[in-house]
Length: 278
Image (cartoon, rainbow, N blue to C red; front, side, top):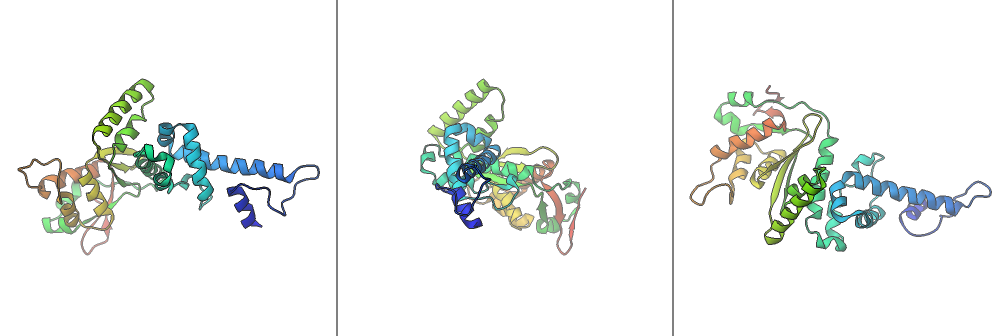
């Protein structure tokens, strides 16, 4: 009965057999009200999590994407705050959205913000104690990043588009978006960001893609020495043609970013448990 009920909610069709209503009331009509309310609740949940995506495409188009997604993706938990993690990947497969190629990446940034906002609270640590480690020990140390951290990167100016939508001034936002879209049409503008919430507010900081790769390496379990190699591997846009990328030059900048933003929860030294460096 439950399987039939869920199937009827997700797809077109009448009230499933076995559903009854009080005498004198149509079971079909009452079921349709419930079905409509269920779909509206899912669409509203997606709209709350992806407000910039909704603004970019408009209410009617967003409802079409959200309804199609919700019909195929039911919530996996009763907590609607966690609903819609796969929505951005779905947008990439939604043919009518192909004319807005950056839409899925903007959605991924919004999901990173949502993840950070609802992440567990954990006090960050300071950078001062890291300098006390010997050079060899520092290279082998690992950083335990804050549970709210996401290293986001995109082949489009998704960070700038998201940031422009944070303005409540419609004129300012429209002008900024026109500039961003014009530049994006002329040449793709890859962007990256660090998303973190060490306190009450989510912080979205624009970073270069190499730093984004560095952060992801740390999250995958790399020590500082290994992550530093990722930081300087390949082309480094900030270096001139005559400069060789040097971890000694770029690593302090990346570490300052992580510690100053509250993105580090603990430092793990070789042969020891994680320790907090205040």
